[in-house]
Image (tube, rainbow, N blue to C red; front, side, top):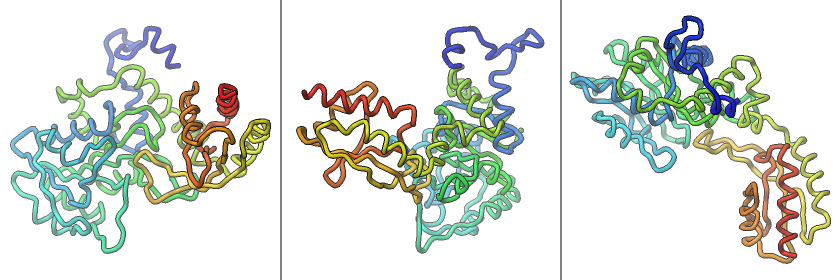
Length: 361
């Protein structure tokens, strides 16, 4: 589909019915709203961009202050930090509470004439335990409504299915859940748990989404036709009830160890003639990508010990293959986690291993 979109004309901004210029990504935005249980939705090029756009809009007037709990001043991938994103947008940060405890009264006492919005950031890439306390979203939403302030939550990983039903992992809040709790706008990543291309999805009240689309800065953050097409395909899978069988990230989560074990046995049979010790091992697969930090899934590994080459050299040679093979070294073995390998790639995998030994001679 993407190859067809890239090489041909398309109706990205053309209304085929009326024969006039149409709204960019109107079909996608409508379906995103349905998936998120929101009045409206839109999309920009990543979640950080979504947050910057929201902050620029709400702090563009005289009010510049954004209230946020100290326990939510997180660092995301690539070294980017929420405080730096806030400052880059022109907002003034008002930290409340402590690292581990924030009360509703902390929010109430801080709201003033310069307050532009209240921001919550979901701890999608780490967790806190022990002496920890924070008010329920419903309580903060009630306060924001009373003070006539928008409440925005950055969800980060963007699960839209019930994660604990996929496999034995923790629950991740969905956009629909958060919006029902009274949040006005939510933003999250189009990749990660959502499983589509890199994008930043914004969903919530129609009046705020419409206002964001009219922001001059919105044009600088918008996605191109390839990203919009890939995201539309992903959204359609959710609406058609096919996401858990078709979205790669969700498929990997749902795959049983019995299936992985059967594949491991077939691959080891194909490797029997090579000068190495090989066995089936067990491991823990981490979801990664800044999601579900407390969850890991039992998995099956291929444990390889080449007899005529050091493990580091063996790993480097596999990385140089086409396509590259990425494993890890532990307990004196080179390990490949089969949960991270698609079944269609099994043949590529053992061919790459054979090729490495063929070049060694």
